[in-house]
Length: 438
Image 1 (tube, rainbow, N blue to C red):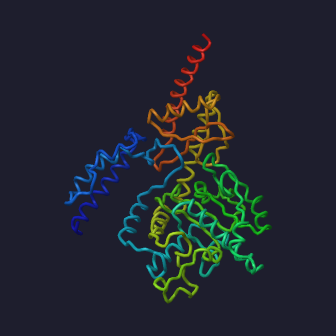
Image 2: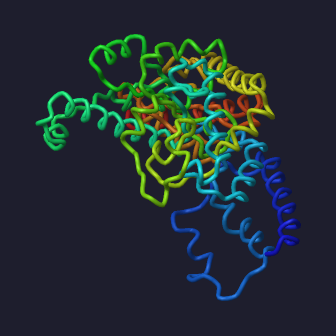
Image 3: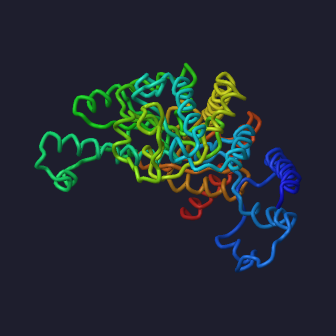
């Protein structure tokens, strides 16, 4: 494919993507395929001769789309949102075109410096303490990780290195092995200190946990993977109170802040993090690395290489503005409360956790088996898609506001469908009880 064909095909692909997203409401939200469906549909080996672009696009619709779960459908209410916006998609195109591997400042200065500035922009939106910002020459700073899971592992390894070095400095006779076998990581049943748990979007109290960690010299990592985006709104910022006690903090703009996956924002004290991951072979060194003015992000992460992900943040933040992003968050929260109100009007159902942001946990009053049957009925119909959670040994349905294009009408249609499925399940249960009684 030469530049001329790329221009033509690129425009066609943009049209295809726009048509897909504009028409996604008409597609079945969850695929109707069985495991292994795809292998028989494609050859067992790669083609020896080139194929046409037209043939590939035909197969996208024939082979790929039937197996896609449409996360951006306004009838997708499962898991948590995965962010998507046109500015982020355009930035991803540019990222792919530049194609740099940003392991050091010298590998592509713009890749490093834009990330540092974007993480400061985002940190200021959240009103993070100055200790987390890079600024002109700050001691803190932000880094884009791939996922919140990756950020948690990075924090854990950094904490381990920090305490090992501290103990060896105090007692030089201690070997690293002797220290490692005695180290303890403290966690709840949600893994780390969490703001907006996956199951029900509950919040740990950092103002209680933080001072204890500070007093005992424990590294405190705070994960707000989903909920963190909401903290750009003043009315939700109090949920982040106590973050000043944290050593590291992470959330995913690729969940709820319109920045397409992958973009997991992590802030930390620079010296504490880079001590665990420092890697300086001769071929990666450059003349500015010890100037104190720049960052080599290979010292901040598990992989060596990294993409130019901050372009997505730059495009989205500029084209939406903080006010536009706040409006987007508020709309989702309003829709979740609208769904909550609908559930509360039906005495067959109960709300199982406080609705704070964009997630509603609910269930039919009755047994776990009854609610399992309800979820199976809902997802088998494939009009909407939900996933469950377990709260105090109760089987609970989660209704998460996810799509960028979801409106009140979609929420209302989803609730009507849930009510219909509930009536069917309850009727079947009644008939089953009648048979047993007879």
